[in-house]
Length: 219
Image 1 (cartoon, rainbow, N blue to C red):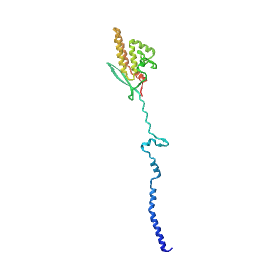
Image 2 (cartoon, rainbow, N blue to C red; image 1 turned 30 degrees about the vertical axis):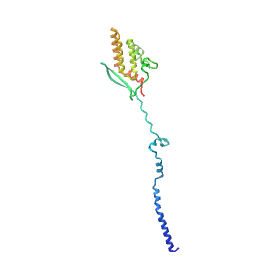
Image 3 (cartoon, rainbow, N blue to C red; image 1 turned 135 degrees about the horizontal axis):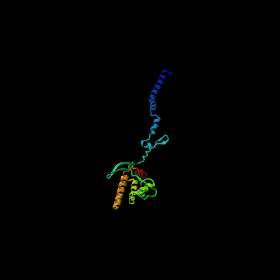
Image 4 (cartoon, rainbow, N blue to C red; image 1 turned 90 degrees about the horizontal axis):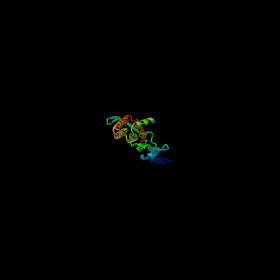
């Protein structure tokens, strides 16, 4: 090959290199593109509204279950109050959530000593205690007072009332019975009426509270 031919070959080779060189940066650009892992992750992004259905560790992830509301309690609150000139102990029992309590035994069931009503819940003027004590207290009050005492027993189990409500109704009932009796008997009955109603009014609220909590419940 002569010198002229050699020069022509070299010029052609340089031209080919010059043409190919602009394509080289494309390879660099490809190497700087988004990694495949990121593309996969981007494609797997779930809209926020669908997060409840996202699979996590093979388990369906849903909305967090709501915590159960604590059950309401039936609480009794005591105060010192007066009926007329007589000071006594009042108690009011209500559901802690403000709801109306459910009454297990109705007032009529207690008054009539229906089946299932606890023994002694309505024993007239017998009070609370052993059999002979109940008989003694019953004998201490006139027969006409027995209905007043039974209504008073019902009042202590009424979930809508208070101890004061029951004691005050008892006072009016026994005084009314005493006033229907003539002469000395009426005066004697009035004395028993005063002793009877002030005794329950001034007494602590233990009996009232116990009966309320057994007969009243909250949802």
